[in-house]
Length: 385
Image 1: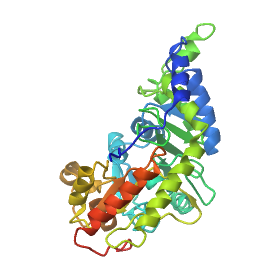
Image 2: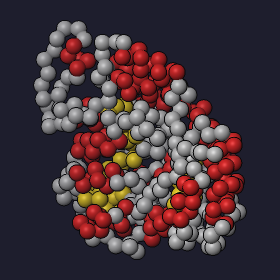
Image 3: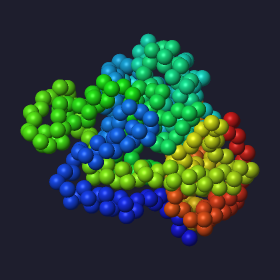
Image 4: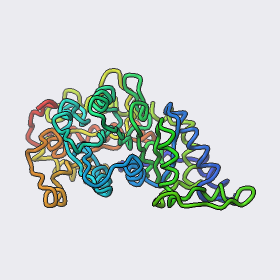
């Protein structure tokens, strides 16, 4: 049996939505984008949403619009994709890493204050795998020290914790609609915020700093535009937005299926020697974007290959990125600095998790994982180790 790492859940609704846009006269940022921005803000309970072409550019322009730049520091973690600290560096600021919680991979709030200096401008938490960080704690720390909070919510569209959704206790939250995300348009992203001025600034930053978009200029009487600031080119288009609008209506239904699959995995691996996995916290609604297991680091790569040989798609989300060549050589990071992130990065294997998985495929993944791991020397792993 072959089990792909990922299959999208796009169907005839998305095809018809995109076809409708292609048959219209407006392909760039227009009515479909405006509809999505309104609907997505409503879904998350925030005042504003700004559609962009990727999480990366969305985060970059958010940091820029908040005034983060040369000489500033932004606290985040090394347990993330490289885009998170890279966008901080690209503003001229410095990413300052702190370690993560042993059981979740999320930022360890107890370590944040020790990393704050007179140059610290913001905290950038990552909601790993689809489980929210402790935003109440983060918000308290930020208020105490006068810091901004920008959430990396790339995994977390459907997430909620303590009654809080992304964007509700921060200056902004940034989302990804990359090909493998729960809500996807192939490439794309969005920023949500309750700050009206920030939202208006972001609309300028995403389109060269122009005071009027194409929709403004060409619908009705022609309007001249001005350039209000030095912006970038990262606006969402209506083809992307049409795909997203259609999916939003069934996002929660698909999340239920993701949760069913994740619970099957959790039950299968709960008492298995040599396997651990991130814990779902009480009071938390998990987006279930990714499901990872943690295995013996000395056997991890062998297990990856063995699963691939059995035609199971796997990935590693993520290696601790402070150990990547660039961050070691350019910023002086070394092994041992962030032990929990390193443990997770050395031991993690991401298994297939998407609504189109059949029961037979889930059973096959579980059976193969159990067989491959148990055929290797058993090592007792502890999530709190």
